[in-house]
Amino acid sequence: AQRVTQPEKLLSVFKGAPVELKCNYSYSGSPELFWYVQYSRQRLQLLLRHISRESIKGFTADLNKGETSFHLKKPFAQEEDSAMYYCALNASSGSARQLTFGSGTQLTVLP
Amino acid sequence: KAGVTQTPRYLIKTRGQQVTLSCSPISGHRSVSWYQQTPGQGLQFLFEYFSETQRNKGNFPGRFSGRQFSNSRSEMNVSTLELGDSALYLCASSPSVTSDTQYFGPGTRLTVL
Figure 1 (tube, rainbow over the protein chains, first blue to last red):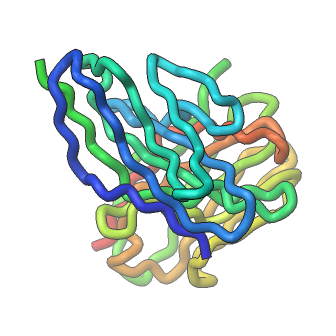
Figure 2: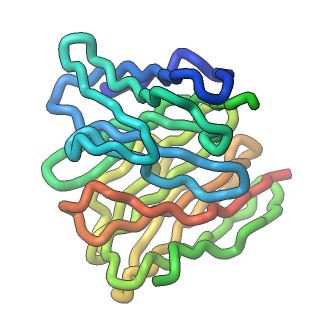
């Protein structure tokens, strides 16, 4: 069975400091990994996905199959980055999708 | 385009009752997924529909069911409500089964008394 672990429930950093949100997964198949973000009073939205290898709002995430990790990083945190971040794994069977979410990390960027 | 809409936004029911929640996907989106979010269990996948067919189902009891209509709107039904069913129910839509991007609705907050 697939599993996504986000070891930090809460994470606080100062503005301008680097930030790393950890995500580890277990899955026997070929993983599709995502980071979703939920800003205060807003709906859950996709931040980035490993397959596109893109940088969104300064965030990047690299899939490390050896360490089964997909950590989210940003070199200089901004106050507007404060939000709840969820790592998710698509345990797909054929073309069906089934997102398995981690428990989330609440990031607070302090002024 | 209008985003995913869910109705009602809030609902209060008592144990033993049943409830139906509705989700209207983004126009043109044909895939709809449902998730349950609770403080204890987090976000858990319920089921996914595409072209009126259930394609995938999570590990939930048979009391949880859903359907999708020809216009891609979806409903989920929970029968014989239990206190533990109190949760935020999220719906997400996607253009197709090959798209890996899901767009989430605001959720329906269900409280079971």
